[in-house]
Image (cartoon, rainbow, N blue to C red; front, side):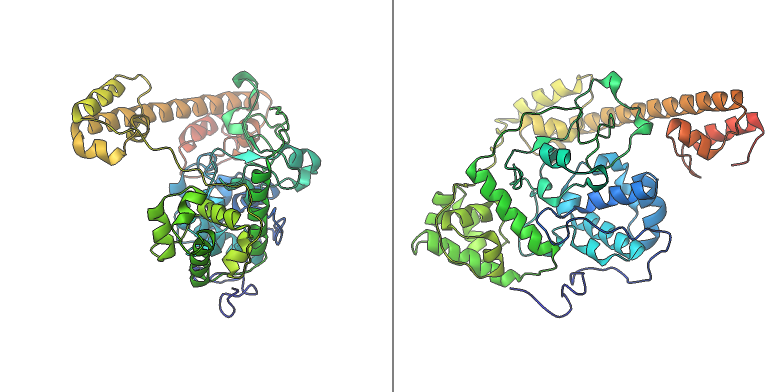
Length: 446
């Protein structure tokens, strides 16, 4: 069901947006998003990367120095872009990040279509938690066929339930660098651009060759259904949560021939979860929704709209998560944690809990002393790593400054950035060594 009025496609923003409308900043290019209104619509992070490349700045500088004035959110707490970009949930829906980034981009550029580059408008209609794939993946044939200036990253590839490209019918491949470490670019010279390997700069990830594996009919069906849903969302269509709940209830009765809980065995998920979805205790997740639609032989988009008909079943089936092995006793947990305390890699509590098959709060509550020791060791290791990176940066700045002086050039922010890739902003941790080199040169002031 399409909702009109305040939350209309013409306005471009959902009702839960807290954005303050203001005139766009003329310093920002009104870059047009790619694929809006189509199944391969560009993702929010992909647009941010392309906008940074158009302005010839890093994504961190674009967000922290440019977009920060258009949002009450402190973007600096997100840390380095190369860390949080790997979390595709920003492009799908992570409330605190997606909404803040989207609203700031719309305010700065004045491009209303940016509001449709994520699945934020499905919040409350579908449970979007855990919908994102990790690691990042791409279709090699899509990147090989596209022009360099048209490379982007669709929202579709960020969905965990999508394993293939609906256009070429081949499975998605992991977006990792295939070159050895000594052939990769230095950390300071890496550029984040859709379709380009950030570690070595290879266009279309040509550094990593993959065989083109044909997708199964079930994988193709899931990818095409997801593409149809993204096409409707990016086109500005809005949906009603109550209509969605009635559709799920009707699907369960339809699949179970009047006995709704039989649908759980047919689709492969738990009866308790189906009970919650039927009785509107919580919204249904996307993968179980796909399984219900496949069992009933109907389209996902029709179910979300509240208008669908039964057809021939598809081969897609829900795959439950593997259960974690349980810790049998407190002594066993203590022994396992003690073994991690002597690990030279200094793992965090989160990683230790994941390897032991328990929650990190279990270690905090049952073994507070060991948890404190793990935290202390991990923080010390992180501090040492950060100090190493600072020393590397300082050494590089000194080396570049010596080379600039030898060539008769001024030691300026611009010249240091062009030679090293290190941006020395005011108040940054690189400002002090830069000022020392400037004092030695007695050249252009900071």
